[in-house]
Length: 392
Ligand code: SF4
Image 1 (cartoon, protein in one colour):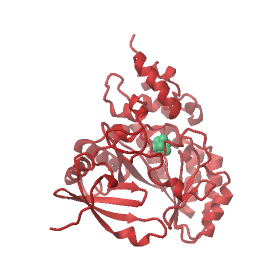
Image 2 (cartoon, rainbow, N blue to C red):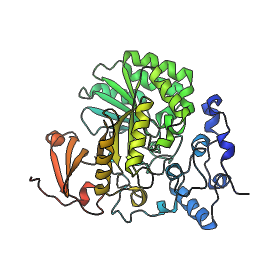
Image 3 (cartoon, helix red, strand yellow):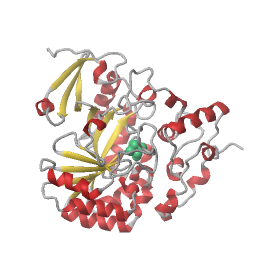
Image 4 (cartoon, protein in one colour):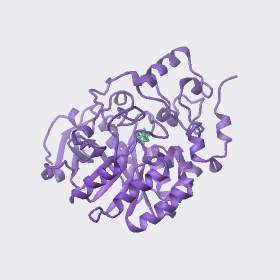
């Protein structure tokens, strides 16, 4: 009989304890074969891929996949493919660290690239290892980049009065035990110059059960009254917006916390006008603010099969925005580049018009500059596009 994930669809995830459910994640190719047919060659390839970038898929997320559809977008986000054996390919050069994290690492898991924002790498663990992750070089792998001493991290932030906000990221910080999360947040609560804290998590999307934990929610609700928390999450496709995900989002909103979404534009997943339109409309419907749509970075073993040429991406975004209402089109189309964050404003004939919105410390004069580049057929990153000037 052909393998199927039907049994996973029947599990009552609302009632599952998140710690117990996490232990049921699919983490080996052998387990994956119970749900999806793999040819001998596919199996061999996947075994090679997961040696480099481990496999970790919650049963809930696996249940969203149509096993009979080879082009299923959810499948592409969760299940490794032989394309990950290609370090760099059709789209050009790649790197393991496209955002320049290592350059701005201050030790003890702190990244401090922009003067006003500090990021704490809280864990390398996630409930799912997304195949397109830009921190693929560290998620699920032993590394020395995560925080070791949270009190010291808090001291770094307290000592840098220019920091107005802190991002707790990873990995997925919500996969840490509640007691660890509360200790982390407690150490930041009384730092006067920190206006707000962001907790970056994909849990509402791939592992909503984590947000059904009353202890965590009541702590976050209480904390949020003293210091504002925002929760950036990462929906990529309208099919991820399920009743379970909606309940997780509602639980966060009931704690008074605003949920913002950061999508990545991904080939074969959401690279069409209707996919972006449905996603953004679905988000505002459940009370999530569309915030960023990221151009896929030139990440090794990711770029080749996931990146969309900018000429196509900008047209998709423009056409989708024409159809979306004000709240649904609030998102910015962004390149998270080593030189800073660059908003892709639009296209004038064959020119791409961009506005830099964040620049690293010491380069603040670049933080509001306009950039114009010549669009090419296949260029997927700023560095691929020839310099040009804007003239009307
Ligand atoms: S949850 Fe986030 S950090 Fe973890 S693998 Fe997915 S994209 Fe990467």
